[in-house]
Amino acid sequence: MKLRDLLELALLAAIWGASFLFIRMGAAAFGPLALAGLRVTGAVVCLLPLLVWRGEAAALRRHWRPILLVGLTNSALPFICFGLAALAISGGLSAIFNATTPLWGALLAWLWLGERPSRTRGLGLLLGFAGVFWLAWDRASVHPGAEGVSPVLAIGACLAATLLYGFSANFTRRHLQGIPSMALAAGSQLSASLLLVPLMLTHWPTQPPAVSAWWAAILLAVLCTGLAYVLYFRLIARVGAANAMTVTFLIPAFAVLWGALFLGESISPTMVGACGVILAGTALVTGLWPRRQPA
Image (cartoon, rainbow, N blue to C red; front, side):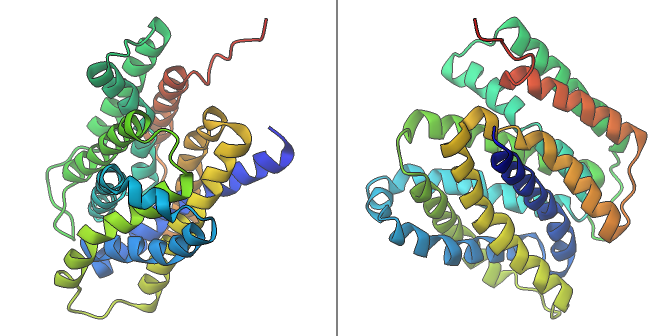
């Protein structure tokens, strides 16, 4: 990748890492449902004009049914899950669990699409899920915290979200190949809003959220969802999906950094060790390591 591409990759990782910070800042004030609704609504406002400007609205109309499913499984439900998790665990911890998405994608491709993994990918699956078990075991507690959510429930919500991401990736690859990227991005947020906006309105907080919570929700929608999608799809177009996927390895580092700087979240040795194991497994599964040298 060129220097410009590397800088954009780092910028995207910093933005997506910040999403876990903003979720932590807004989840308690708005609640998981209202925050998720605000996130997709703001993203729709950003992405729909781009969709029309690029002339890809017709693709959305033709493929609205599968895009609707992708919106539910790749945005609406995972956003709720991570909002719930933010009530009990740190943003850095959520980001580490989020890094398991390629593991779930590979596992579902094996079970659903019959894509049997090689020995290297199989080792990566075992290694990655071992890291998940290590981290979950260290943090597992059934005692609810101040917001009424226990760490074990929060961990389960994170893993449910990444399982849904893995399903969406395989479904998109099987049923939405060749669909313009902006039609997928804008259409998925629009379909997610069909579920989340009614839930947002019925679960709106009774106490007015603080200004800081509103800023967190706005930045989550505009920066971490709208702009991030544009950056991500532009990177895929320039450097390919495999290189763009390396953002997965940088997101936890930025999420931990932002949480430590702005919320005083602690970083334990177990978090560092388990994150390394999970990312090593992810690297094996995605083929990012070891790289094959050209003949």
